[in-house]
Amino acid sequence: MISDIGLPGINGIELLRVVHASRPDLPVIIITARREPALLKAAMDAGARATLVKPLHNAELFNAIAAAR
Image (tube, rainbow, N blue to C red):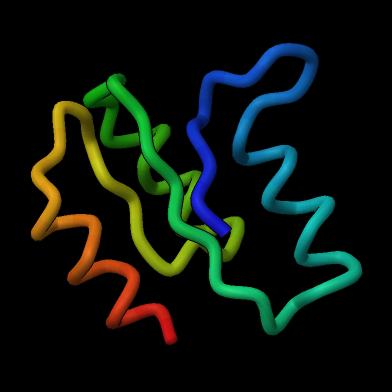
């Protein structure tokens, strides 16, 4: 799953926790425009396989997807 952190009604880290509660095996990649180290660490601590900061290049996303398998 690929999710942005900024979502209406729920943030991507909360969504990640909900998803992992029922599908702990599902790889999740979090994308954000916010370059806050604490936020990126929180996403990884919640189980994200990768965090990518916008603007991102296609190669970054493709590499993260390949590594998350």
